[in-house]
Image (cartoon, rainbow, N blue to C red):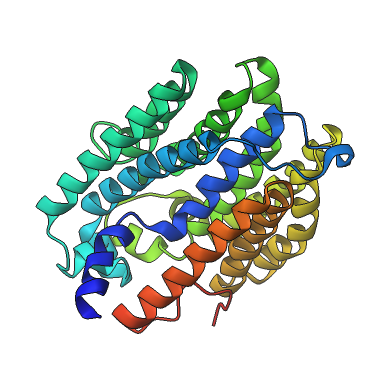
Length: 313
């Protein structure tokens, strides 16, 4: 069994637990484009495998950017005690670079073979999350504002990729994406909080490092409120309902300023939105469940970790 687990190292180097928000944003873009965000047509099961093939493609692009981030953050991850595969030498940097090149090439091939606009969204995601976020002279991950902008812009490219699968690129695409991007930005802000100590020691001035936990959590809560209002205005219940349910968790995070409250807001808000997408696309629930159970098995057997989990203790 151990050789199998070591083989899974290369899969989990892609960080599959971060695929959930990528998948959800992509499918939210698709759902918005085919105009089924109203209750008059609640269930929608796509009749073609092309949507899921394209989802696989954007997964490869996102996974490649996650490896690039780990390659640049080995010392930081060591300090924060996470992402052991590179930091603890389970996979060599050379092997990681080879895997990155392969998955990015395959992802771009899938994107551009679908249509030109979809290919450009894949490429945009690669440039923002892969290059601008990690490498000089930009290195936006170390900047308080541009780090947030980079993450939200990546979320937009995920949404746009799903939209372009079945809809034309119009100003309506940008308008429909705004509530989702506010929610994505709220989660992004809170994910920076647990890493602030390691980021500070590594010389990175992220949003919570520059502005503090209180301001970060209240801004995240405000983003969720505006995501709810924007979704309600657009009558997009896919984002409106999860935003409404998530608001108390974000307010609790702002009031208590605790890491556990922030983690709870992150995990439950992503879960609520994912379940709304599953209501539209039931096949997505199967994908989420398989990924979650595989990750639980891998981290328990490989590193004796109870992860992923909804517990924040």
